[in-house]
Length: 391
Length: 99
Image (cartoon, rainbow over the protein chains, first blue to last red):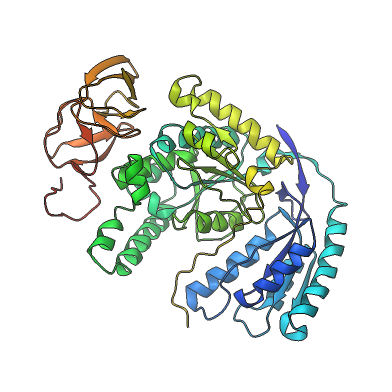
């Protein structure tokens, strides 16, 4: 059994980071949360614009994503920053986090006003960082690692090298009985038959079919004109087309390779915690990459492998995001943002297998503490997928 | 000479690894060896070139999988993209044909 050095949490899960998270319950308290985190090095903030005036599934999705982000094992302790009149209950957030065995505190902006709330919050978070810094990494099974697979700003090179290389890393982790999350429902349309073949359970197939149908129907419903209606089933951005991708089928086939050949063992709602069984989990998220990554990290991903042909600076508030490109020009122009260049696969200097092993070595180093480019550039992206109308 | 990759033996399109001008020779690196062809059109970097003659309504194959349908006859060396391929997932559009 292979092992790595990670942060073992009280529920048995393993973090690769030891963040103190400042979590606003609502947009209205996000500014205070950002100021608190900015005042305390060693803390992170998950700033967002949801939390109120939401209904039904949309409200439940926001609540679930906030709770599960706080419960991600990369987080050591949480300060919830509430406003006081929002729909997402900041008291409930704190209580659920405490019930999981993780330190959590709450501060309400309506109790003090901005300046005093920032001062009090800063003092709380400073103490939390001091306590968290005493937690040490220990030797844990590699199987506890959870990878989230993402692509953004795809071009011809994504499907030719970066995505298949990430698929190799998925296969390596699967051999160690680890877990992998694949998302972006819109980008699975067109290649879904290949995923159905990897599912054994009939109920799971039905859930996956419903998830695809819902995404297509909702997108069509929100299309206002002919251009929209054509771009929905053909979810190809102008940048994708300029890069040489022609149809959704082509894009989807190139995208789903990121899950390697791992058997599908779960189909999850956005931000829903994945089960403990090793294998591949399909999460219902939009293709919009920051929202997709936010959903997978809430679902339990502790490291994100992010392929990008054209280059993007994307990171995440609590999980290291490893940026991978198969486009040598992008690796050169955006060397400040790109962690891994696999253009060697296209030039023929390296095989997919060799590049996959080289990537997995980097994944292990990052899991054990090496900073990714997005981390030291302070790229703390966090955006919750909003699926309903706001009141 | 310019270069392109063929991802699977059954594919009828290859991806060019540099911009190709009309009349230039492309060396297509495939699974079972090399194929030479002449570009009949300008093909931008990263785009697809037909490595076989493809008839209208025939499937475009990449990754050994169908990625769309040809909306016109395409000959070896032509640029294969949105101007002559339609997704099988879209509704029938004017000028395009669904299989």
